[in-house]
Length: 157
Image (tube, rainbow, N blue to C red; front, top):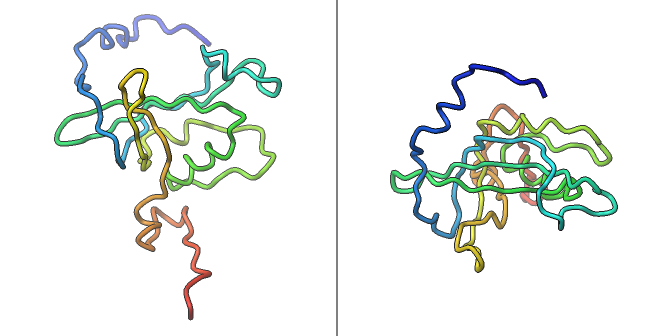
């Protein structure tokens, strides 16, 4: 990492936030990925024999409900490849091939994903339970320029 001095971003971070302090209601929502990066998790339960340093995909998701913006965070361990492929599919992006090691998490920035949230019993905050297929796939339409394919094998014609 290289330090970038006098960028003005530090001052901008101190400005009042427009994120709602209320709790996002549980349910299905469309969310924009506003931050997507890899990091070493601060939580010990992410560290395993296969992932001793605890690398995870860190996502910041913005959800707009009734004119309010809610931010939901999700950390997905690098060993949870099935969940990561589900995130990519929800964003209408191609999923990586099995065994692929390198992943550019920045492809998710600015993308819309569908999520199902629940309220944590310990914190009372919204947590991501599932990433859902894009509405276009459910409705049988393409989501974007041919990036998501609809499985039509069960259509009787």
